[in-house]
Amino acid sequence: MLPAPNNRDHDLDHMNGVIVIVAYRPKPGKEKETLELVRHRVPTLRKEGLVTDRAPTIMRARDGTIIEVSEWKSQEAIDAAHKNPIVLAMWNKFFESCECIPLNKLPESAEMFAGFEPVAD
Image (cartoon, rainbow, N blue to C red; front, side, top):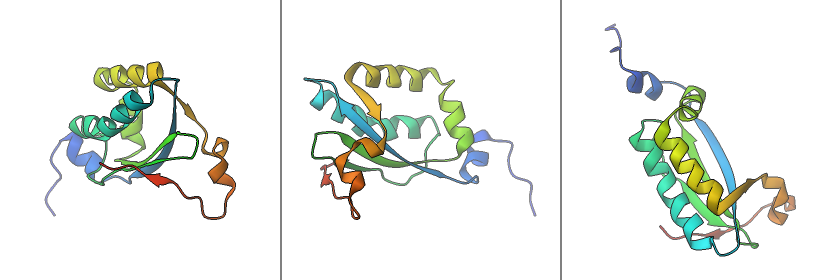
């Protein structure tokens, strides 16, 4: 067996992924800005080598909250994001336009089969 290259991206590609579901509640008047930030989140993280190639799923709750399902390459990738200046700058834009809320704050989360409106790419 050949040794794996000493390459951080290669190592991340072979660790266990972490699927996350995040709910972004836009601040008043920031709905379009929040949606655009969500649409660009995974491509930005992908350029930094932090997420897998799995396409994110973006949807909208009845109250207008945007929900995104995506996959980090690993817990180590999540930890690395907290030190990455490009990711930190992106997160600061999110903090200006929305708040992240727990999924159980969405009325849909109490339903047996929670349904959400799909958001077009």
